Image (cartoon, rainbow, N blue to C red; front, side, top):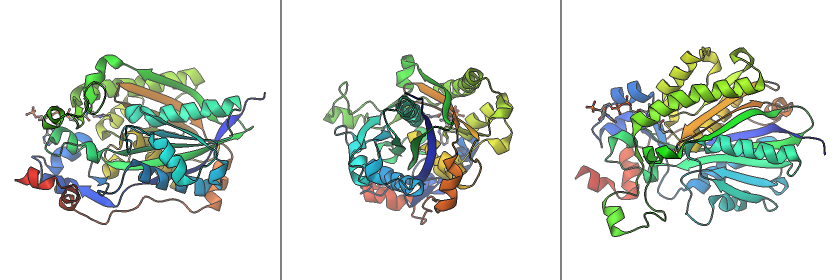
Amino acid sequence: MTRKHASLIGWGHYAPENVVTNADLEKIVDTSDEWIKSRSGIERRHFVSEDQATSDLSIEAGRRALEMSGVAPEDVDLVIVATSSPDYLTPPVSSQVQHGLGCVNAGAFAMMVGCTGFVYGLVTADQFIQTGAYKTILVVGAEVISKNLDMTDRTTCVLFGDGAGAVVLQATDAPCGVRSFELGSDGSQAEALIAPCPGTRNPVSQYAVDNRTHYLRMDGRAVFKFATRTMTESLQRVMGKAGVGVDDVDLFIPHQANARIIEYAAKTLALPPEKVVMNVADYGNTSAATIPIALSEALTAGRAEAGDTLALVGFGAGLTWAACLFDLGPLVGTARASHEATEATSGDGATVDSVIDDRGVVDGLIA
Ligand code: UT7
């Protein structure tokens, strides 16, 4: 069988309408716009409304990507959803996304690899296409982190946001797709970024809830140290595997957790700023969604074209990391020319108070 290649033929992203600014957060936790901006680069993030869940965001991003690609939902062979915040522990959110999009002939599975999930998903999809097993695959990275945030914990609640991004990959004979990759994991640091409950180690109980174990906890300094090291080293290794240097890569799309981490990697690898995508100011850390959102925005803005080489790199819970070099195939230009560019839904200026009110927890925080 001739080896096939994965061409990226559609992309899209979606962020919920509620925009929460740093000033909004100043009203509910002991923090400041100055601290958040200087330590993380984040200025605002999107939070879902009470009735929105991860499948809703995934379906909207997936719909936009499919629309751009011109692929009918029934022609999708596989749906992969990377997320750590599924609608339910079971069933897998991927089936809700598959059903919601009308991908009636597709298999579907979810990948839970923290913020690294989208790159794991992209590399997995590329393998299915290379073997000839599948022709058309939708890969989604989506999160609703806000519902797992302890809004009394300033060390986490100011950093995260909600959103989704998606790409459509299709088999082609033209050389493109993943050129080299690295998937990594260091489970010895599991506690550094963890939501202990619910799960089989900590099932839901009054004790678990009273001790707020259902919220995300993070040892920020440990993750920061891990991130700065793995981001630069894994990028160097995937470039080495492909036999290319920084000059041969057209666009770097790193996980958007902290502007300082991205700037450190850019400086260490001597990456020109115009080749590095950074949108953390507008979305915060949307975990598995940061890379597909950044990718979608960058492609929509024309920052990469057919034939260009992208470097994607992520890190996060596990702790895990993943990097890959991805060559854009010939259809990228066609997709852009023949379909309207997708755009993130801009915020309507809803305040954090209204968002928190919707969830019925603000009274407890302010009292
Ligand atoms: O997606 C992957 C997961 N996440 C990450 O990649 C995050 C990686 N880590 C980071 O981005 C950074 O470590 C943070 C942004 C989380 C924190 O920045 P930092 O420069 O490492 O700050 P720090 O944790 O060392 O805290 C410095 C001070 C502390 O006060 P003391 O002990 O020096 O008195 C914190 O209590 O800042 C305090 N602090 C805050 N102050 C105002 C922590 N959070 C806040 C806050 N507002 N929101």
